[in-house]
Every structure is written in structure tokens, then in C-alpha cells.
Length: 333
Image 1 (cartoon, one colour):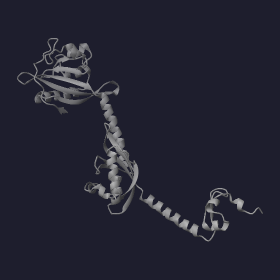
Image 2 (cartoon, helix red, strand yellow; image 1 turned 120 degrees about the horizontal axis):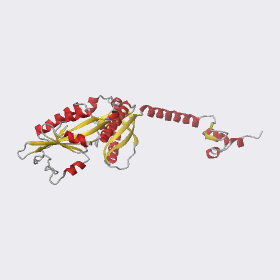
Image 3 (cartoon, one colour; image 1 turned 45 degrees about the horizontal axis):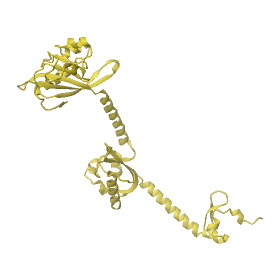
Image 4 (cartoon, one colour; image 1 turned 180 degrees about the horizontal axis):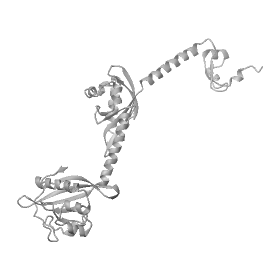
């Protein structure tokens, strides 16, 4: 529920003629054509005027003049809680001499519901006292549906965010994360409170900090920058982590307002790659220095790799041997 500044005083409105003195020059036919619900009430909550958008039935609309919201709910079989809620906001508008707004969920047939944003706006007389109150409302059912869909989308994102096996952090235009999941804390070895008191850039390897800062500046400026790259981070206990990071800008109204980062600890993978390289290097040394002639074939008898001893044995150069069918080097018999 929101309140707004005091309204401007207007002459009291009785609506006994075709014109409404609240809006000089406005005729009742104009009020009748408004697409928004509109009614004028006295200080007891009795209707002085209702437009067709509020009540379509002409007979009911005429009957309601001089009646209250409670009378209307009783006549239409509507839960009286709606009348009580409206009357509470009406009294607040009269008491505080301010415009009061509130949302109302209104049930209709077949279980479908409609939402309205309603206002009560007091009309002040020349002495500054409330003479009547204008009540009006606009339907916001579509807006509420969008809001509910957005909340559902946000809930799905939250579940993905919290349940992800990857570390995720959301940044504004600075380098300190505004939001992060449990995996992000686990990856760096910090508690939530510890991370809040830590400059996250201090947990980046000194040799990689400038690269991260430069990429961050360029990304926020909209300049081309790699989306995925690797860097080294420092765990709380001091050991080095190899991180594969994916960064995406967060945009609002075409402007980059932040960055989302997804981080994957690839330390074990890097160790395995290094072990494989070391193994390959050892094999290469054994291969090249062996006293035995060795050739490696993919398919057929065309070698893809030969060692120095094999070259020496055949008398051909390495270039001549690679890709050559060795059956041509075998004696016909």
C-alpha cells in the first residue's frame, strides 16, 4: 500500500448536474467513457456516482447510488471481505487526506481471478477538509501474470544457481561478487563471512591479476574479449587452483550493468595433462635413443613415426620413409 502527497483542494462534488466541478469542463459522458473503474463516494462510503466501467449493468449502477460497498457485495454474492478491505483504505484516505493505493485480487467465475490496482483520492473543500472521495482502479491481471512468470523463472534460476556443480558468482561493475553459490565458497575454501571480508582479487595468482582486470574493464565497456579463458586462483590454504572461467555480461535496457561468471576447477585435469606430456616426453626419449629400429604404423605398412636407428638401418631419410609403403623396401623373395 502506498501513499502520495496531499491532493489539491477542489469544490465539493454532488454530481447533480451533467458536469463535474472537480474537473472544470469535464462532462459526465466523458467520465462514463473512461476505461478505468471510477466512482465518487461520500465520507460514509456511499456511492454518489459510478461509471459504466466499474458496473456495467445500468440497473445495478442506478440502484447503487446511495448504497455502500457492503450493499454491492451482498447483492452480487461477493465475499464481504472485499468491502471491508476497501472501506479500510477509504477511511485511511479520509483520515490522512492523502491518496491511498492498494492491489486487489478479485475472484470471478470458473476459478479465474483478476487483479486491480485501486486508488482512493480525497477531494478537499475550500477549508481543506475532505468532502468526497474519488475511487478508481485499473486492471493489472496481465502485469501480475508476467510478475508471477518472472518469479517462477527466478525460482528456477535460483535452483540452478544453488544446485550447480560449477561455482557461480554475479558481479556489478566492480570485482567483488555481489552474489555467489555454495560451490564458489567451497572452491576457494572460504565461509560466507570470510569471503565478505576478503578482496577476491587477492585470491587471484599475482601473474594473472592484470589479465583478469583488463578483461573485466573491456567487457564492461562492451569491447571484444574472450568469453572463456583460464587463470590461476589461490585457495584459502595457499595452494594454486587452475580455473576455467566463463563470463557473460548482464544487461538492462541495452546497458551492461554487471557480469556473471561460471568457474570450473580444472586443477586435476591440468595435472593429468601435465603427467601425459611428461609420459609422452619420456616415451619420445626412449623411442629416439633406442638401439633398436622402431617404426609406428597407423594402418597398412606406411609408417607415421620412425626413430633414428630405423633411418640409419634403411639408409633413407626420415622424410622419405614417412608415408611410404615399406613393402617396397622388402626383398621380393
